[in-house]
Amino acid sequence: MSEQLRNLDRWPEQETRGHRIPGSRYTAKEFMNQEWEGMWTKVWLLLGREAELPNPGDWQMEEVGPEEILMVRQKDGSVKAFYNVCQHRGNPLVSESKGTVLRRFVCKYHSWAFTPDGTLNFAPDKEDFPEGNPCGKVRLQELSCETFAGFIFVNMDPHCQSLQSYLGPIWDDWAARDIHTWRRTMANTMWLPCNWKIVLDNFNESYHVPTVHQGATPDTDRKAIRGHIDTYFKETQFDLSDEGHNRMVMKGGFSVGSTDAEGNILEPLASQLRYWEIDPEAFKGRPEATREALQQAKRRLGPERGYTHYDRIPDEQFTDAFHYTLFPNFAVSVWSDGFHFLRARPHRSYS
Image 1 (cartoon, helix red, strand yellow):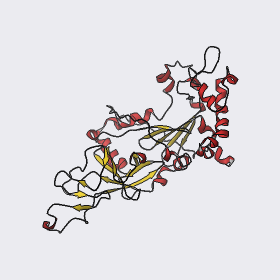
Image 2: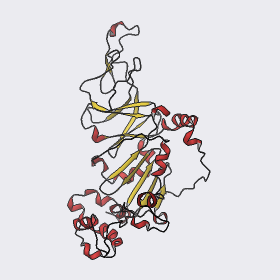
Image 3: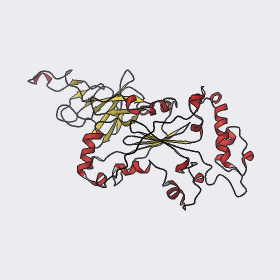
């Protein structure tokens, strides 16, 4: 692996506009409508995870504002996305969030049936339509759909740019992580009585962490928060891409509870050190030194233990939090061996 790949890259320098954001952008129905027409329907949106659709015919339906979007695994392994709307009278094709279709999606209104690739192949009394038999001629309305890093992205704009162009430097960052092989272990969904941007605002800064997650005072040591992360802004790398996405790289900290009163390393840090053949006793009274030690050990031992992507990531990824916010609504923290993410969507009743 080249030394250049091991060093953490910087994104382009940006200039902020510095103007104030009026509160109406969070409360006004008119602005929400403008967002929908001018933004939500023009950008790439993460709507699914490929591992949730392992076999041909598996499908998942996701709501985004007033729209329902149906993602379907195809016979050739690709994923297609359609509006969840029968092309006859606009009735929804599915009402559940996920399932498997063996042959066709059948509309419960007039029994029009569409194959998984979106083609109409059955309609009652098809010969009696004045325009002729619609089968084979009518298709579900398809959206642009691409997959990357195991995620399924869709775009409602028929003239959209490619997903790779849209993601910019995130494409290269994530392509080196083997994220497409990772599996989801848990998921939670909740509806919040607030504008979707409030949720993203919270996950787009670390200023709140010592107060909210530790009950901090102004002089609290930000290296010692419970999340094993140093959130002090002067030690955080902030990046903003030309495409509008951003990244925060926060150094791994030694965490509240990692040492006892005598300075001995406690769990779970102690077990993590032993796993990587590091003696916790060697770091008594100096837990902050474990960050570099873990980086070196993972670099040395990782590939032989099956962590094949370790040769393609920077040293910081072994210990630090790489937190990305993908415009407009996807916040994700990526480590060397896992990630957690948050996705905010507008509720259909407020669109």
